[in-house]
Image 1 (cartoon, rainbow, N blue to C red):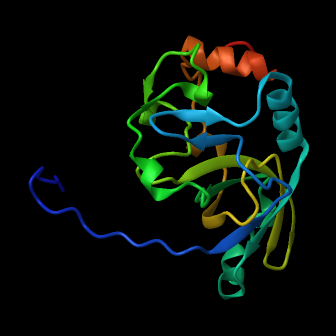
Image 2 (spheres, rainbow, N blue to C red):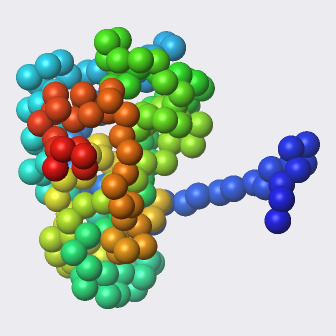
Length: 187
């Protein structure tokens, strides 16, 4: 089905299925006036990333949806789709940003970045699933602020979701090097 440019877009409604419980109380990036602002600088940024990498979060799924989790514990990783609830809706109008708020990196369109300040601020992360306890999933390495609404949980299945040899621009490799993260080309 093709969507005609002048036809009205369908209305969409999302409701949270749960909430993130995390030790992260504020985001590393904030949407400022016209760009992103990095809340942590240099070594603090690396320490923040290490804290996230090692951190354990709980995904507390609403009891009404608990049965939807049946079998999820058979997977090693899950994709978590969540809403960055602390972003002021007026800041979601950013069109271009310096990635990670770094002025030493090129200005890029918001869809070519991982910025949380997006027209529809839906964030996604693939994280290891440590355990399921009823309606609670414990995961490692999720960079979500405490209280973030969870939109969806999906099992991660590499043949279906993984990309083979993804291309990453040099500025992204630079961010990863600065954080001590191996990019696929460097792994």
